[in-house]
Image (cartoon, rainbow, N blue to C red; front, side):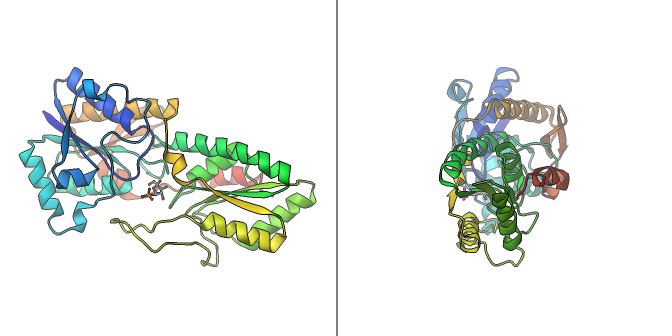
Length: 342
Ligand code: F6P
């Protein structure tokens, strides 16, 4: 078989571990030919390929990003996008495709599966918001980086009696904020699922400071929205999947806290730092297991599936189930975090 592999959407620690696993078992044990498409769906549209071999995928397990490159190109956004995808797959004699991506990349995969393309999806996102899998790789790394940063910000918070506002990624779901907030001892955690009232945030901080705390740490997911719906700063730019570029709510929250409470407050936006660098051991293992399951499914002709983690097991679920809805933060988990607010 000739099997194509692509990585789409935001880069994510662990992508290279998936590619390595797919190639190692696909070529080494099954004798298939692996073809990498560059920059997600763009490489399929533009027929930009590289051969993937055991030799050229050595030494990438621990490397962040993706050796294939990525993009947010959506073939369904241009008139001839899908036709060009199908043309490339025919001309490259691709028997099966393994797209590695989040809701957008796998959403395209799901539509192409409806057009008869043989696909096995691998879920990827640091946001951990895909519903059919307990966890996505990249999330554990992002939480660890955020927690390390919060630990470091405690130093300045304590030394200067400041409120430190830490903005983390999380467009629709506040998984990173909630996990890192619990791990890092966040005094308030703001997530997209729970619109916040800035007056209540300030009164929690004032309460904490009245009880003797000289500093506070506030964690804000980039997609957090104030109850009154006016505080998120948006650039207005959207990508091909219609997502507004976020970033900036942490700065606004910090300004408001300082203005309303008089506490000296500083924002830190962690942004893409959370996606950068080497994956944790957990993410390397999860990504490797996903890659092995995906190549097994492709080899068996079990198409239209997405690999997923369910409890301790790696399973296969229908692709459409994988992209049907986003997985939001469990209110019970947020309740655990909120015990420590204020
Ligand atoms: O999809 C993962 C993610 O990191 C989100 O948390 C974030 O909102 C988005 O990507 C940022 O995308 P970009 O790198 O294209 O600005």
